[in-house]
Image (cartoon, rainbow, N blue to C red; front, side, top):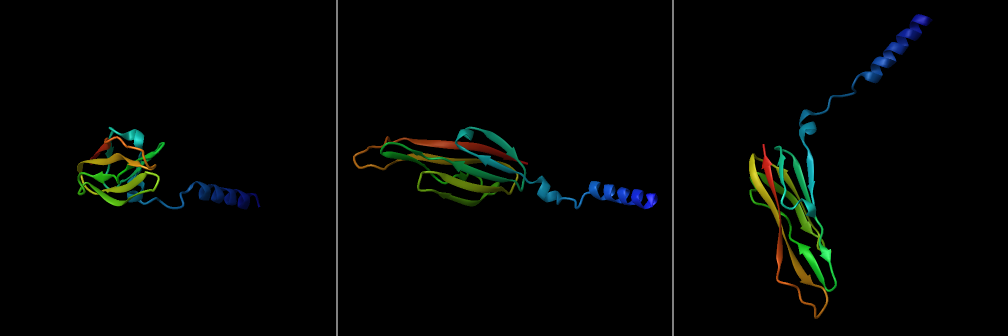
Length: 135
């Protein structure tokens, strides 16, 4: 009886410490990076297959809204855009897949839109930019 109990305890301990399955090596190597307004001017390094999400927040003021354009890649062979759009509140977003080795900038522009009659917007366009190096 004692032998069976020790054998059962050993089998349970082995089952608890053995991995159920090994993760897919490709899935483990991929990473996701999220960029926001505060990342303007940064340079980042990523790997082929990684995913980059850009989320830019618009600014609603008194009689005006500062709206972002959809972020774009300067080198689609390096960063392929797989999604993107804008929201009524001035926000914009885009998702890129790293599809090649090289360097690409992701850029977007913020411009003013009048939201109240009689209000005037300044003729200023602000540029947001992140440089992405891939390997």
